[in-house]
Length: 360
Image (cartoon, rainbow, N blue to C red; front, side, top):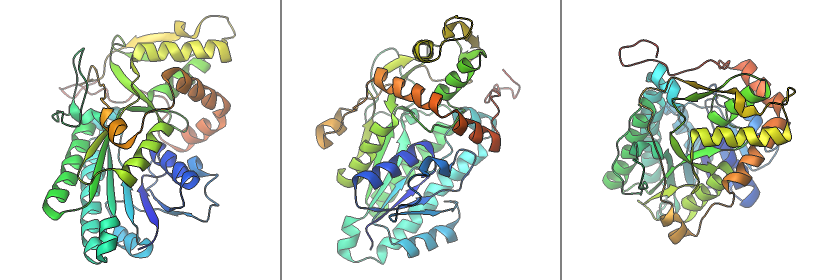
């Protein structure tokens, strides 16, 4: 078995951050496995492409033949599974892809891993790890108080979160039934460089810098815990290396903010870095729009276990992370333009189907 880690979804936002961290901070060989859907972008790893320890494989994780060949070729010592359809609004418009990739794809990886481990020497089996990366959205919505812990009940409220909850349960079941050496993690809202432009922060920055209305769902009261993506990448590698088999770890930034607070923070940063030509504050562009169906009110993560057991805590504050993020997008407008030019997102709103099938 080689000193190789397979990262599924490695051309995505979080996956690419994990690969950059692995190549910079370890001696592992890294195989990036990605189907290259609309959100997959190899430009996120342009600097890493020439690294002798990096290899890319364009494979759909639902393709059992392709995944089996992947294992046979690269003989991994670990899998970090991030490949997923991940945008809630898209899951409302079209749930089928989420069921296929997030559930069937995860099942396929688990079964291939199970069969692969049977062939390994005992020492290699003990070394192997299957790290499944998930989201806090599987826990549903919190009230005004309390935090999600690793023991919180699952109550997913969107097709996306339901598909991720299903994959979490599959991973746990393969551990309990087949003794698969797994670790799991559930994270809060990630932000940072290279995020696909349909997500909240890139949308705010793009709209604000072009003088367009900045859409805020409902009254902007929904609360999320914000986690800088590089902090998350550090946590994921630590969990993969040192997490206890069969255990799950919540990863959060300890930075709760309402969506409206986030939008106003970005606007204030832009007022300093790129003032509007008419002199008006960017927050004047805020426009409240109808809320998303099934929009969970509040997520908040208790990340005390990973701090206590593995010594991890975020390095970026909300203020420092947001400053870095806004500056990166302002300095990389060409990247955003190229992503939008070759994909299907042109700024239109998604996820507006109501319970009766019409637009909200």
